[in-house]
Image (cartoon, rainbow, N blue to C red):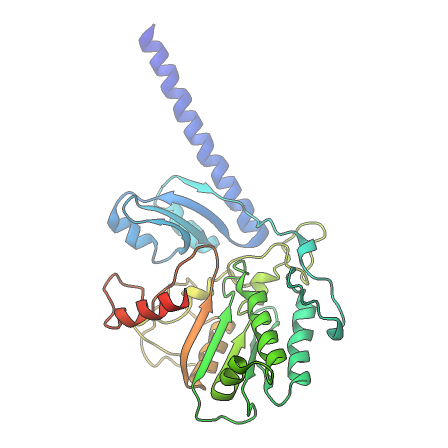
Length: 340
């Protein structure tokens, strides 16, 4: 009798585990069909497997435990299929961010800009406001479109400096945000920084010192296709932030689409390879957004830059794709602590 009971219990557990994974797979495929990416957690079996898998998955900083081999990751269809080949259990997280579309500001005239800063701008308002700053403060502000996204949205970089039409021998600072389209805190904060610098110039000594002695470049949103992804639900609006995704419109994590310092390569202006390229993304070419930012940064002499993400409080040091301590570790730690 006891032996029979054990057999039944084993069958129930096996069926439950199989059903759980079947349900997880269905949820994953649904997310991929709806928004082109899936957010999930899993546990690797070995350190070697852990290190191998994080090379092709887009890893979230919200949860990575190298000792327990637990990871939260994002994947597109191709990288998720590759993950499935390992046969590991996984759990799908929310397939769609819970953003209230009412938290997106309705389109206003540029003269009636809402400075309560309690809502995300619509895409229309974002475009209008960036142009408004350039036309309202032409002596200290200029707007450049450095490229377009997969879906044809503009990649804006706004320059603030006292002689904005000239390239002076001044330190160049570059700030950008939201290359992961669903990490949005920095997006309105960058717009607010622009607004603060422009509206306080001439009346605030600290602002005057910054604008007069630096060339400041700000890109509030480096992945507008991801932030304004419309999804396929009823009422989804590509002008509102209501279902943002991490990747760009091609399903590529832009933060994994650059050459790294382990194997530096570059596509030259004629489209030929200058050396063997290393890609963590799966499509083996630069996305339009990546290409635009690399060309922009190559055209400048940027001495310090910050790229704002969201989801966890941390500072990524440069060249953090290895576990070896950087030769300038003390300096990076100093400026990170000062910033924090």
